[in-house]
Image 1: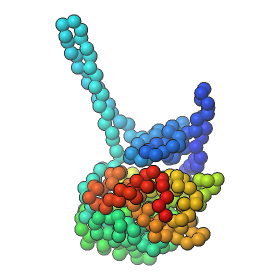
Image 2: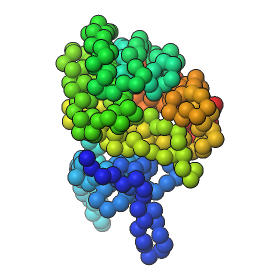
Image 3: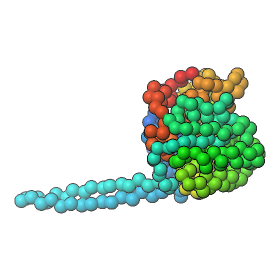
Length: 314
């Protein structure tokens, strides 16, 4: 297991002291007011207009530049015009077609009654959507209790292309090592990929809403990292729900964040308003990555704007 930095480091510069984002921390995006540089050994990498992240330099895909020089001659001077074109590269194959169906797998934070899954299917998805999330499960027990077998049957019968959203971590962190967790996710993803027209999409864990000194106390960073690693290992897509939900919660503050609690004292699960907010966040991330075309997701410009601008709606 790797040891991950939880706080931004401080770098002294001649003009003062400038905070830098830790490895895997946010370093940019619309509305971002934190550090925009990364600690030594990592690079700020664009993910979408709303999120850039500090990635270890060894994992950064190098962009290529093509420079063309054109000489233009007049009667008295020769002018050189140089045009540089930069190509942005990605590590996983892009698929931006409209979904025909969505199927969800996960723990209680994805369920219909305590998570964002039910709201996603009923309020956000523009396509057929089925939620198999099961409270208390891990990447092990979701299979041993029979939920995975039911999901696979449903995926085979679903309209294609079918996108299977997979979010685990909250319970896995209590009983599994990160390497076991990654391996389990990879096996799940491979089973989905073996079904023609089906695509796994890994979702990093929804943030809990515990706060310390006015900021979210995050305990899921390592599980985010290994969720991403699982996706990259099999060439699947993933969306960064953990970091985006943390940024939103920090933006609206502790009091507003607890207005989304399932019940008093439960800062992990969601009430109906909280489910609506994070289901919309998932839908917008799927379009912005991009994983699916906009036609797959219902629009709600007012709610999207509130989330983007970190305004409380509950």
